[in-house]
Image (tube, rainbow, N blue to C red):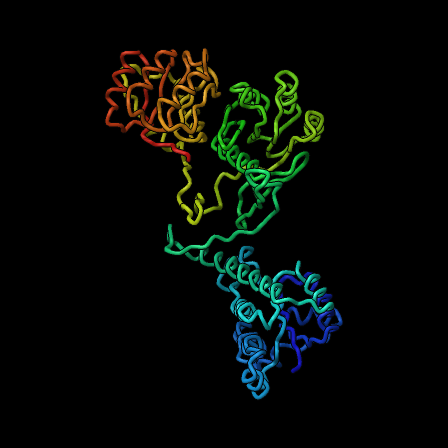
Length: 509
């Protein structure tokens, strides 16, 4: 039987050259309107699809261009089955051995009219019948497919791989439509569309391969991450940059943080990027070694000098710097500080998120939940529970501290400087509240005196309050809600420490 290739593409990159290769290898070309015009203009002999289908051209505003018995049968019949071959000849069904099709990107203009029906039908039919039909959905595969056709190396493994790519392509497409239409907060069944952006240097460890995927049309700063200098990213770096972004995006004022292993070792705000970064580094210069530095404001040369000073005075290396923008002068300075230090920009952090859910992945399972945003709205619910009330300054530092503790792995307790919006001690990821409190206070040392102790949840016992008193803590913010709240309140009253209940847990696992 005569061999046909059906070409119907939105993205016409390389389609004319690929079609010429197909013709050279004995395929007659069938095509739909837009692709047909491009091929004719490119000098390719092509048959319009309506001559095969018998469908009136532009019927129902073009909704019935490809859907037909002739086209779907031509793709689906089994070439290895003599009965199928005889039926195809009897019914004058064309033998369509290659389907080249890609769809209008729904993400660009999501609407009912931009939902393709005929294209996905052809792709699905070709992918199902991959043992007989080659399906190509990406222009990136044209050269490879052309090469194997010309050299007679079309293996079953290649056919199957192209079919898998086609099914993933359809799943990606359909999941966007379902998520666009659905008003359910948590649908019974859900798929998440993801597109690979790049292969990473490695995953969490050098022996683990890794790749980064993004949702279409996401406004996440990770989508705009631009490599300017130094090391390429690993999965660990991506995690730390994301943790840093989630930390600094909470602050309207200039904020900086140093991240290690997904948790901050220093968080601070300041009048400019230099001051905020200086404070974040000084919060724990020992832990800042090898860290990832993230700022929510552009980096100028004065802020870059903070990193140079850290290198020169503390012998402290920085692995990654990630900022919205960076001046040419600042970049040139950082290049001299450390050749392997990665420098990245991510553009402006959007005020609202495009994502519907905060996702957490566990092998074989994904948790979908709301983002823990709109923190400032909860400040009005805070309640002073001790006889002594905090000062206005202490309340301001508590508001800074509650944003900061949200960025720390639970159980989390932190100490804030008594004067500055700057962490002085961070106890993170502990299995007991008192354990986290001890780490934060011991790290803060003399800065604990008069400082603010912030807990991401309630104190189950009064031991953390009593320990805070031994270090001279000036005020405490905790969730409240424990059966032993009165014991903690009593301890705070006896020590003369004002204590506030946030009445909102701030866990981060």
